[in-house]
Image (cartoon, rainbow, N blue to C red; front, side, top):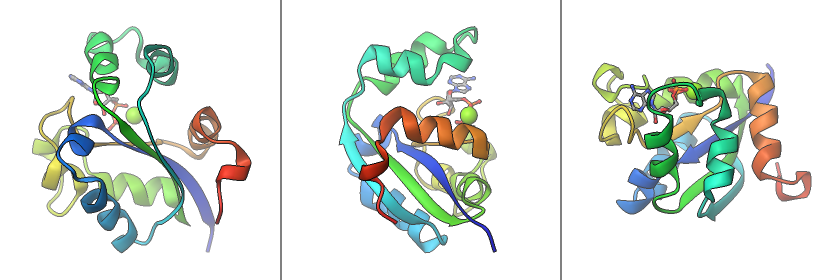
Amino acid sequence: MTVTRTFSIIKPDATRRNLTGAVTKILEDGGLRVVASKRIHMTRAQAEGFYGVHKERPFFGELVDFMISEPVVVQVLEGENAVLRNRELMGATNPSEADEGTIRKTHALSIGENSVHGSDSDENAAIEIAFFFNEDEIVG
Ligand code: ADP
Ligand code: MG
């Protein structure tokens, strides 16, 4: 059994609709533990830096505008194979392709406004956690 960490964001479409608890319940029921959590309103510089890998993609501007449109909740999740488990619980990027019971199938509005972010590898999880949290804010 390998307990690892991943990084999650509850995106503006979800916080706006008061779904922070509903999303977190799916994560917790799915075996992940919230070991750090804070509600923030991202700056443009933060959003552009965080999503820097996507800066050449056609939706980059729209994605940054969306991520700074309302507050988000950034979280560190811990559990067995946390990156993979979180991706399973999130569902496919496009909610119309997401499996039943996933966060995106249940709550997302569109491929852009898709309620959650989740790291895609252990390496990126470590980078993304460090982008938003100091080690003393993470309490397992
Ligand atoms: P994921 O969040 O599933 O890892 P990506 O890393 O490919 O997906 O994309 C990052 C985010 O960019 C997505 O979650 C979504 O908010 C947005 N996005 C991705 N593809 C599109 C698209 N075709 N049109 C608009 N927004 C998109
Ligand atoms: Mg991604």
